[in-house]
Length: 137
Image 1 (cartoon, rainbow, N blue to C red):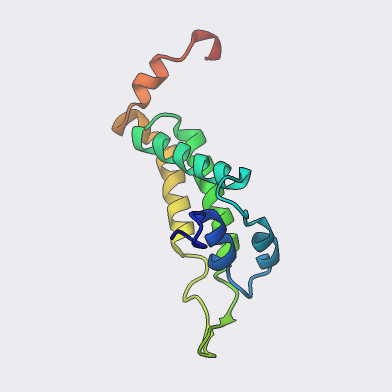
Image 2: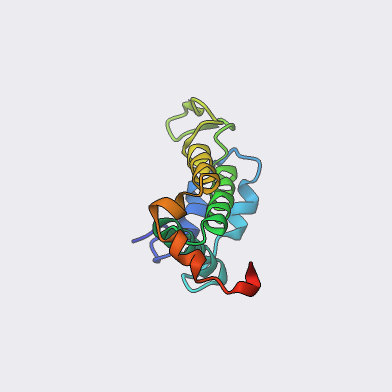
């Protein structure tokens, strides 16, 4: 099924998606939840949902962009594209460019959307801001 075969995609990534030669492999492998109902699985999935909804609707762009960037940077650390490893066939595998992989490009794009205030122009951000209570301004 998903990830480890138990409907647990968070554990699947933390156990099998991490770079086996990365400096934090034992940390991420130990974080892997043993059951789909664990707190870490719920936290990760809710964080992804919150960031995705906020970015798609253009509301809460700052918190969504920063949260999604933190998630992407933690995934980049788990994948450790700068560390080489030996695959099953015995070949040494390395990233072609460890700094410009998809995690970094997505993070930079999210920061650009946040600083450009894209939610106000391409989403519901302006409407959302007009509904903010005056005591929060």
